[in-house]
Image (cartoon, rainbow, N blue to C red; front, top):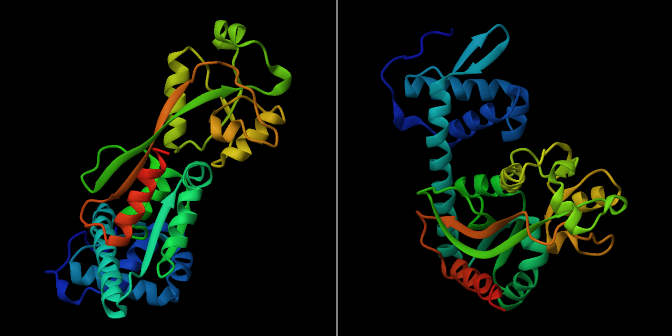
Length: 305
């Protein structure tokens, strides 16, 4: 069990950003070799850096179990502070760069694929055209991954499926999007017959198990008495649409993704299975820059057109 969970009196003044990055990398990867590669150092340098962090905190962050290093509960607690501190330092660096250059700088926005492709793609193109001095980066990821990027300060705002209440975020609803059930073409029956036999629906293809949309779909289907047995997964709606077209199973999708050529699907049921809300989320501890506020205004305006 290492050399004691609690060590000598901490010396916090010498903790560097590298120490914190090493800790987060070690927690995020299966081996210290992979963690070292992720931060661009040797495994020996990573080990020495984490040992120095332990010494300065006065805590044991990893216990040796044979050849493995297992994180202690204290390591996970420290990681929360490390994530927040690194995010705030990125914000400071970004602000300082804007001041030095006298330019608006760089803006990073994250969106789920449906938002980027169907709802706000044209608005983003127009915004970039109207702000040629601004470098705009777009990250297209599932909602939970986008929220992780936002917490880490790697993006300025995201458009994602509504997150749970979190005091670190400011959230504004943009679009309410109905989700419909679709069956393979060969298995289509009339919506009336489908509605009368929910126990016969499926099997299903769906979003990954940690998806916020999948959780919403699953709870609504089970409320109807449907056995939500997922046999194949993808985070991309277009891939799910093709799976349904190929006869692999039923799926619940937004109309904008399912009823798009090629291979547009027909609804198995007239009314939606569920409804999700696409929400613009930003960090509560940062006042929006003029550039970010301008983008927010453009996205909000796009929902009323």
